[in-house]
Length: 462
Image (tube, rainbow, N blue to C red; front, side, top):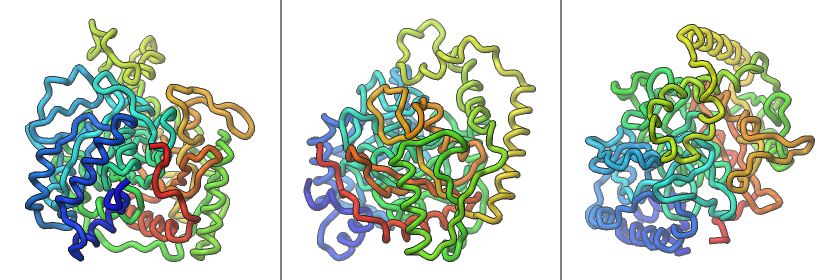
């Protein structure tokens, strides 16, 4: 890998500012990297080589001037299809940039390409009928996760300095964990999701958000600062002032697993090591924490994420079920024969969700930040559905339980890479905060990265 593609986003900014490199050199280095490694990781839906080189010759001024980035192919880019992993959308062309994309461009970033997703973002693996299966750069026989799997694989492999993902059930944080990245799921409305497909609005917008991914929490903050802010086209957006937030002295609740569901030993060790660093190196009070009232949260999340979508999926697939991809139908196939949700079901689940959220925020008055595993397992082999833990095997739904309740309650959360497991796979931890306190999480994550043990900078397998 060339030196330029090894740099963090922040280091690229500094190198450009000192005149040690140019936007053209950065873009050329990353395009060469894509050409070399993408045949193995299969992360890209499209690459805009000519356009990127043309922009790099006269980069637009701004905080991201000349920085090469990528975009998950669920965000609109003017004139390009937003395929969202589905061959059904080959004829689509976006009339406008998604708001987050427009803000990246306005800040001077250069978009290298769009990255792959599962069909309709409906799976924790990235595969589709457009380009096929994406592979994890750390171990090619493992998944990079989903639904922002192509985006995470590209960034982890040195093909991009950072980019945009989206997260309705862990789809930023899980691929970040699997690929050794930092990834932020903001509070709904903090970072605009206008121009995303599927549309992030009620009721799905209770769960789904747009969020940045990069190699470090510092880089994530740089991207987040550019893209966050009020957008009247986003129904969850509010014109709130951005005020500095510090993590100094914050009390942290520590959860080594999700309620009574076991996790792999590597996930537990990472949480324990993070708690030790937060306490001994950074001076925080850390307490064992067991949330109260979340027992039904995974199933309520599943109702909004999967069950409520069944009638729409049935209409979409009518007469062409055989053309769908398994990533878009695995959850659907399990639920398609269930009774269709009623209006009463929706209202009751919304009321239950709001009661859980209120109760959790009361608990978080004492512990404004929670530390947990990002996921119960490390990156798993493609299409594996049972995973060994310390005490028993768990399935996919159980492995994702540390992620999904955060979406249900609309809390911000950030994955931070912390350790490696015995197989050489990254293991991240999750920092969870109260609504609108993303900057506190980012401050804490940046400090945690400064005191953690050194990690391998890049995958060696590619």
